Length: 197
Length: 197
Image (tube, rainbow over all chains, first blue to last red; front, side):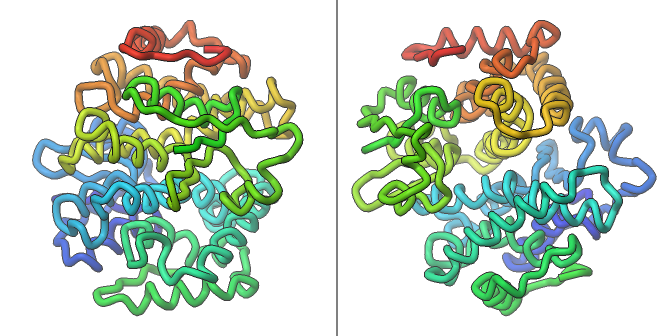
């Protein structure tokens, strides 16, 4: 399996992190994002959305980091990381939506402004980040893991941009339960960091 | 099963639409959103995020419309609406992420401005809507359905805010394939409209 990858992308790191935790061997293909390689063929043919990560497994092509997590868990991690029981699966799904929505438009977007100069309303990203980090902290006050009482792909979907929040000017000091969860994720067997975490 | 519901919410309609298509009986509980009922107990205890929909099934409580779709499909719709094969499931998941991210912050947000007076940057919502509707149109030019070559919960996740886009000042005329897909969804057995679609 080939992963079209950018080392500094938290969305790509979601996939690299899960592969490390689940012992999945990926052929990492670095993409020249600064040079716009993802915005023109042949990469644009693989993913018309012009984004990384992209996973290619034979004739199967997937965009979207959450979808790639679901695929890799389904083919390799199985029940441990992506429960098949409907309620547990839906619990994980709640957090996959959170990763795609509130995390993407909160801490991830704040980092895009500070680290890469994106023209996004910084105050709006900080307000969104404060809201989601407060909700996350309250949840983690009574749960060791996001869903299903064990580490799942929900951890891989949220960890990168939460751990990278300081690169967007967000102080994690007020969120003690989030910080302890970050430590628990870092202690998982096979854990692999990325620059900034 | 109780669905805490707002008739004019597209996120709630995702769930009502799937229940209608899959023949699932829900006890609909209207929430006084204008009066802030979702922002205080007892509803805030059910969903600390202060949002509808919320699904309650015995002692199981779920927020997030995509997660509720996964749960209802897993318990009632089965393989037809939410494939268990990893690649097909991941194909559906791509669109559940799209619903939570690009659709929520594009056509849904544009409607929140025009219809409900939300203080969101309207130009930004229109730019995001134009991008996602173009990508969706290109996909639907070669696919009758979003994923897995059949109607799935991906249809229920995207249909509401795409069909409601004109309420956010977005003209669907340029998106011929999207309009034909809307017609296909409306022709599904059991289809149920909401005001504005």
